[in-house]
Length: 318
Image (cartoon, rainbow, N blue to C red):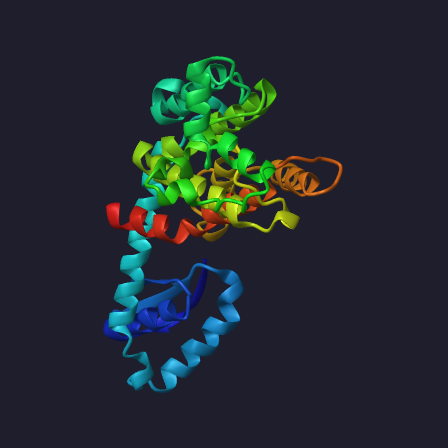
């Protein structure tokens, strides 16, 4: 902290501090005595702002009653917002997992564990999208965005290509999310569920199961719709499956949230961010085929756009 100057009037000192706050310069006042008279020392927190603060101080001394310094209401609003932000950060830090994502225990993340177990069970029932039993066939056909057997049969019969939303329009709205629980092979499942355990566990621990559920629903639906309606040249198809769209949504949330909220208690290491983004870009190249790239991009942006609304909720709940 650096001493800015001294004023003889307490009300004027408070008036100056309010004005400095509206200029994003935090200042405090310390009462003292000089020659038996009370005086008020003004201190600022950020030493880098001292030259600017000195200019404001000198201008204020020249005319402390200028209307520009009538900012008590604005300063009060700034302090109230700062107090809300502080309480929100404290609340989040109290929820923060010890040791980061790897320190989470399954009992603390019931929705995350439930999602993983459900995906595992469905994977084995459907034989990883190559069903061999009547139950597996029924589950597989009812969980894809479109009935894959009917969809492919129509195309082979040279019939008009069905709308990717045909089954949704019939009222089977669960198909917008259920493909996230299907996977093409055990490695596909393992990779996605490890990511779900890490990313989903952190979010559930910090914000609770209800928020994670809403985030899964939102990112999963947006990812699936993006994949289904994207042009075929960009890899769009309604026959996509897997939780990767949701995973990229959770990643997008945890990646961007600390950038807009410096007090957020969890940050993905830059190396991990580079790896995940690099993997997403690699999947778009001819080196790797049969990847739901549109779902990755849709899920990623869906996770990002949630942040302003969640920050507001954190503040209102604090």
